[in-house]
Length: 341
Image 1 (cartoon, rainbow, N blue to C red):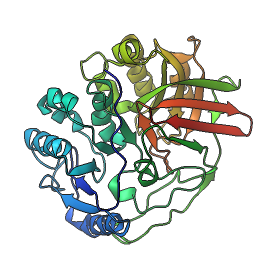
Image 2: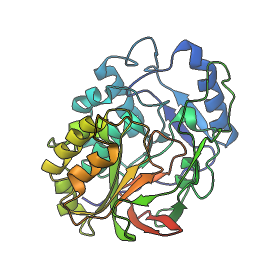
Image 3: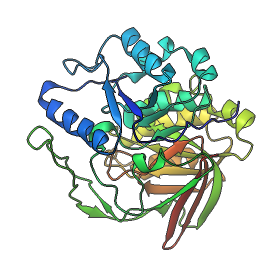
């Protein structure tokens, strides 16, 4: 299996919107409409599916969510699928996805982060599709500060092209915009600063195929057919891997257990580097989030970079699952280059 990259989006292309995890409450429908208009203003068409209800934890029963997602992914008219946001139980759709059909189909861009990485990772390591870990739809109107790239700038690149991004020096570490009170907000307010930090303070220069996601959600895939990262590396990534992982909200001891599950399933056996996202997840008593990372990766000969812009602390790098990535963290040089090939 060779990683296959979707065709670049063109003006007039159709973008599908469905919720494999949580839907959109009525109070946030104005924000949803603003985001759909944002896509249309960029020259795209948008089709909203039936699995969008925000009345409960999930948008619809698992089978219905999986059927609608699969239908969009197999529809040759739909060139990208961008859910409104993540949630809690995207894992429920995996047994219902027709992965055999997806392996045979031309890939479609699938964009998102958080719980959506529970779907993005299997699409890459099991079906061989390049995917995009970045903004969710409801984040899309926000401008990406330099040197980061917006997902719409990445999905329009030709196959074989590259995108280079770097560390954002400003972040939103406390609170979120109130989309119910102000659904039209398109500029973030930054409240903290900082860059990427090597775990052991030595310069990092590494390359490999990029895979990863939200620790709390993708860890459930470790040791299953949906998250066999070791087999993906051995069979399809002779270059080795660059993993990106981030803690959303769980305490440090819980994050350590999640990361150990990944290690015992072989996720780091072929890692050339691990990028760990900036987090506001809490420490445990006497045990920090940094301790959690060191507990699992500290005795491996693998460079680790902390505070990368790949998690629940905005802004967000656009990370292409399956792309060839080159990472350099050396003093003021903090850069990630991805080749869409």
